[in-house]
Length: 151
Image (cartoon, rainbow, N blue to C red; front, side, top):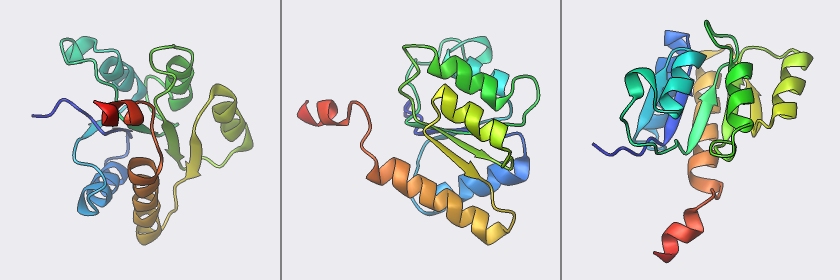
């Protein structure tokens, strides 16, 4: 199996997680998606500790991050990632139901790349995930792409 995770989905709601994964895969926007259910597990995955100890330390191309989760919140995950030289360049997209100004302001202050409020309607949510995937996986140029093309 390819150790290259394209999308790390950090989502505690199984319905939203399934919808996100299906939308990305059905539209061929990501082959390798890792789903974790809380912020603590996300940090363990990224930093290769706990049950992820021994995995190749290859960062995901993008992290889709919910905010309101058990154990470690999305804001705490974002804070740790963006304060670490090794992980701060990983694009993080907050995909959450919170449209509260303090959450939005905190995320941008910490360095989030984008903040998107989850639509309630099934079709709208699926379209949002597809559009996110299309932009971040196909349109946006990421660090290291030009260097990899030269090799």
